[in-house]
Image (cartoon, rainbow, N blue to C red; front, top):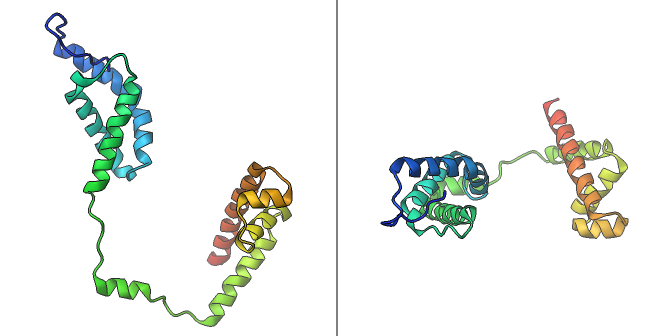
Length: 179
């Protein structure tokens, strides 16, 4: 922001400060918005971003121009995100509603068999490589690293096969559910 402390021999007009703040916002807001999305819900990001820049404006005398402005703003953003999360009230559910939600809906035993059959048919439609990594992960309980070692392929290959296979599996199961 170039927000250097105002001293008696270095007086700046309010207009210069506003332009500096505007320039800083244009330069850093997109990255800060992305950073804040890691911590808080998307609908709160813009409000919190405004709070970050308001805090930066109020504390501009403390900014050290020999240091990174972006780092200074990230520190403010992190603190405001933590404050936001702490202030959030945890959602409470009446005890009666929690008890009802904890009891699974009774489904006929045939539904479980039908689900397994749909999954088995969808797995059969995957490529051999995709099916292999998914089966080793879900039925074999192996990590992606263990699968890579067992199949003697790079870890990235296992991750790509798993991702593509799960995406295709999801599409196949959604189509089967709709039918």
